[in-house]
Length: 541
Image (cartoon, rainbow, N blue to C red):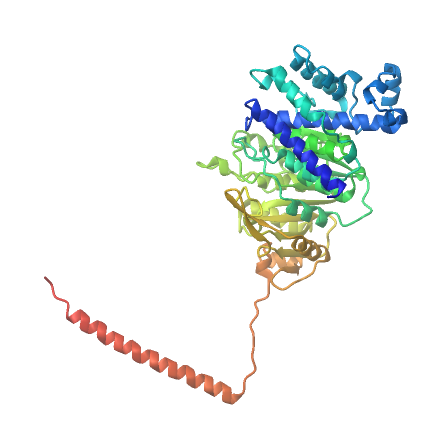
């Protein structure tokens, strides 16, 4: 087993241990369990990264047999000077708040209060950089009181958590990159990133979809100092993939999401992936009603790259009327879906997100949006108006229709829209619906794409290659003649096979057809007579 695989196994074991502690204290599958797991995990990660940075700056600490004893030899002023040299991606820790100090106090009376205060103190010390902002201007800090979620034995609960943390160190994995932390993050939240009855369903975007979106958007290796945005960010899978494709140090992340849980998970994702500088741009709020990111003149901010897997259907009737304003005329150019008399939960909110994204693209901006496949062929309404705008303004770059059940959590067939404000050439349409292998995922069935199949889609899209019954390259004018349909299948050529035969072979075939017809006609007449005779034999009784 490689060192990386070993560390990944150990990290997942730590997560399992923390979940086991929660289960032992009655919090298994509790609604607050994810808060405990993610915050304790994050405290451990930040603690170890601070220690790691100290050791990089102070060789004496790196070689010391007893780190805490060696650290005690430094004055507060000396530690403050060292701390000023630590990167902004690393949280600041007062010595008293280090995990090793917590461990020393585990048998102290009211240890739960000490544990909680330690986390809160770390949060306060790092409030400016590590807090998520709400649209109303409130700061959501890193940590909260953890022990309050346990009714009895609070001290023992916190002691059990600390004892799980001290047996493992993250110090060896800070040199790892995106793929490692993507796997860890998914494992950490796999039990919590589901639709738990909230208004926004927090579906975890499959890695295949995220990878394809990033690879088809970022084709220039010289991209630098660009902005990336997701108006319905969830836990940040799409943003992490595109940031990795560009380079974490070459882009700044912006996001908004109405869910408190999603914003907390996105912050964790940014910390794991060395994108702490973007935490200040995470906004918890309603993008459609109150878009937060704006320019100095009050207009919506425009971004270089936008990725989104928006909620498809959602009841937004409570604020639908508030959207119909002069200020939103350009943003919602195709219209706002009407409020139905029934099934308000089926209101197509994704149509608002698509329009918002189109309005938020910079002059050379690119976007990738997950949409229901029905959107690409709808013959009327807002759907068609949006497609018309994409074609008329020549910002549509292509569409990839994915296999069914690519999302295990929803049976809706999805496609990915790719926009590019600088695209003036043809459009590539891909039908990938026949790719993938179907597997069981709990009670659901999902489709998995192989690495080769993912690359097949990426290569055909980026090269704009036409492949029989898979991809087609069409002009904007051709799309107009098809009533703005973006379904690849409607552009595939209908093939009629012609076979050369001799006059003698032709005569033989015709004679065979005639003979077969005579036989069939004779059988038909015989059946007719039999049916008539049977009818004559029927009597009323």
